[in-house]
Image 1: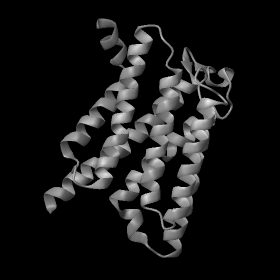
Image 2 (image 1 turned 90 degrees about the vertical axis):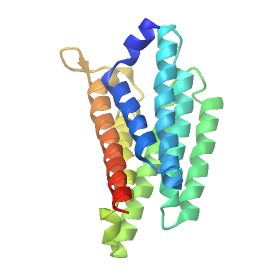
Image 3 (image 1 turned 135 degrees about the horizontal axis):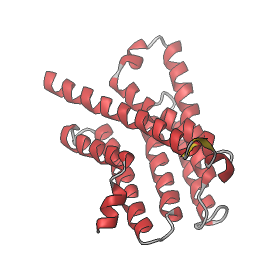
Image 4 (image 1 turned 180 degrees about the vertical axis):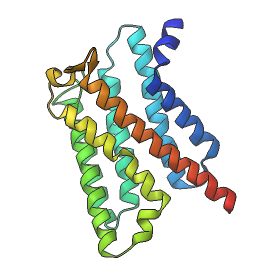
Length: 216
């Protein structure tokens, strides 16, 4: 138990926990988008908890992380599709991603190897749909969308997806283990940077939703 607590008390894991608690306290469970965000935060938190338990018990976290990627990316793609101008096309791409993720987990990378390409494919699908939707809103001169709280939420995972895809796209430990200075690895630096941005934007969204509820 002590080893688990010690392992879980890392800055990123604490940020994940605090963001989940913030969401549980301030988001309106009656709103679908809020329930959806809470589902994403639960996936992130439970993944960290399960990973910590596995590491403490000297077990592989590969399968847990690979399954988590499919669920996490799928939930973000679903949220983006719900807010897309061309919902049918966005949901079709979501279905393609889920199918690819399951095939990759079952037959390609498998359950004993980290599913790099599932992460990268899901991430770039999200980024491509997000950019396309942004251009659509610009053509429609719908500038209110870019000032909305929903836009902040949909922007939250973009840098996270892009930064980690840059790492995983090489599918090489030599790249992820590259030392920037001292004992700081390139992967560690990028992981902390993109996660801090990711959870900061989610917390900004939660804070603004809380203020809007008080105004109403």
